[in-house]
Length: 83
Image 1: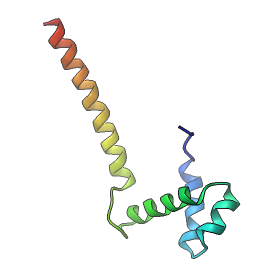
Image 2: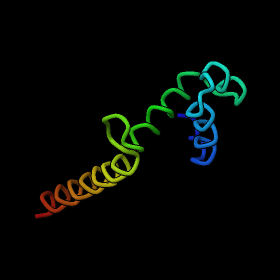
Image 3: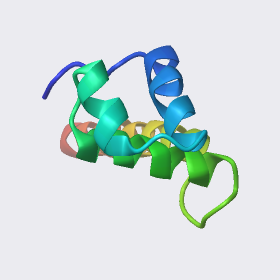
């Protein structure tokens, strides 16, 4: 999986599109795909409560919770085998 772009870069990429420039112009000038930029714009709209969806903060919380659940399940399995 490619290394994610920094959030500052994403914000600078989304800003001109939100101001009215077409994705087809902005994306090539930044060296990213149009689909990638469209996804960032969509997520930005979700984060600003303009459209329905899971916000970036909620995604991070869900990821952390799922990781913790996996850890706890492993611990339970270890204790089950040991006991």
